[in-house]
Amino acid sequence: MTLLQLKYFVEVCNNESFSLAAKALFVTQPTLSSAISNLEKEFDIKLFERKRYNLVLTKAGEFFFDRAK
Image (spheres, rainbow, N blue to C red):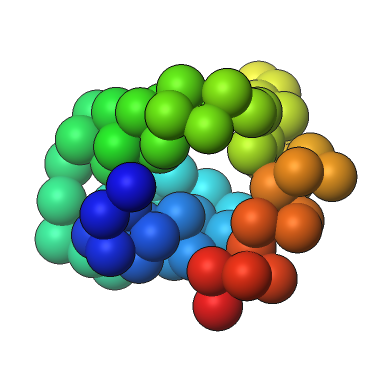
């Protein structure tokens, strides 16, 4: 885990969107998605429920967000 991954995660949570977070962070959406995916793999948890038009934190994601802030 890197501080950059934490920054990305917090921004996605705050924006409730990968696209909006990517714009705010001046990175591409695939770069952001990859960083979050790597974070999920590293801890073997699912941080978000990804739906077609919706992004929702899982219970593990909520716990992680509280700590990451």
